[in-house]
Length: 560
Image (cartoon, rainbow, N blue to C red; front, side):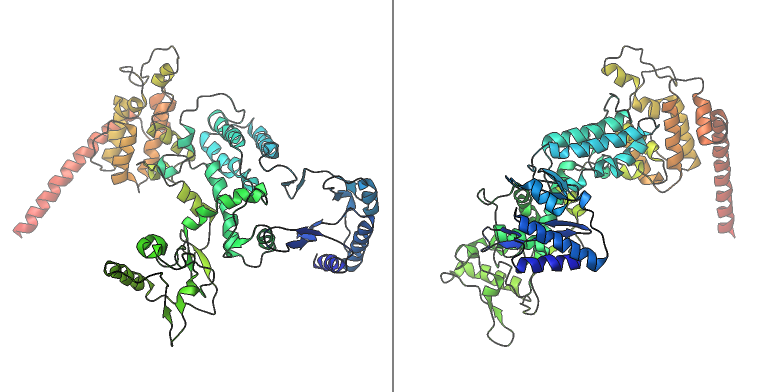
């Protein structure tokens, strides 16, 4: 492709191809003749039959030089505006005629960036993928994995360049919600937990499903980072020529007269980037002395507002405030008047902050992302910053322990929020039924009843505490039980898996009271509950005898 690029550039320099000149605030603008990506080529020229003939010859020369064949059947000529002889031009080149809007490399060309139609392909791909899962039995744990790995990843390509419309975001989120709670057929089943909770981080009580709105902002912000960090990129040169740039870090604000909606939306997120970034000063030509974060964690204009108020140039570069006189040089910020006595302390503080900082003429200034160890920007780090609010205490490490199956963790997560469809929940949703705990038939069925307070559940709790020598009093709710007991005693032991399976068994079999005990036995893989009660008594007797023998041995040692 390098040979093809050289041939096109030579034709443009010779005046045989015109290319496209982009004009804006950056002076004379920039000429774009062609764009290359892998084996795809986009060529810009006038609607002239002579230029089509030249382009045809260039393609033939490229085939002769490289030995490659260009597939003109897959090529298109896309007229921009009103082109009368487009059929003649297409026949000259030997390709077909296309039209705008079109698609190139999976992205829309010529379509309004806010158009909802652009996102129809994403929704269609989601529904096609769900059709493959429709006839498969997938547990809720499996659905979480598929949503995070597949469904939530499908819109990322478009979201990395365009702002997702609100109506599209709501539609895509609805597909995920329906699949999570209803399965592949998207059946209408109760959505037990609020979606805002579901898509929050696991440590906040959610399932860790991506928030499309926050992810979209983080992806758009990456372009602002690339604009600041990349110096020789051709796309940055195009943006700078059209809109101008501020210090080389960000383009000028996009006004209506010059604006293209795509970059306008990207430019809006530029401020978000520099709130969490700082600068490493080299020669000081691109960093503002007062307004940029380069010396400390805040700009000097905020750290020393009284001095900033009478600075000679509030937009001065760092280089302008450095005095090269002398062997080492020094700082010399200029002010519009002499200092008052009460301002000398602020001046001394400013000089102490600047102490140790100096310019390095042989090195360029660079931007540093504060949220990463190596200073490079990561979308995930910005996503975590934007999603950092609203943290609540939640036993997430226990619920999502790697030693447990995901579907078991999902049930424990539902139970922690008190959102399991027990009979009391069904009655609140309008079902007419007799509410009775099927395990003991003594009280109403609630999540805390079947997992903690039911006598049969207490037997299993006490059994586990005895087997693992845990001294603990049962909490009032299942969530508090996980937060207090497991955090202290069971976090690093294998009892968590066994105990959760027992509780799952109790819930799964609460409509079959005659087989509940047998099902628990099957889950535990051992003797029956009555045998466990007998074993519990024997273990207590052994513990008492052991303590008596230990005390007697210690007494013998003291007498000796």
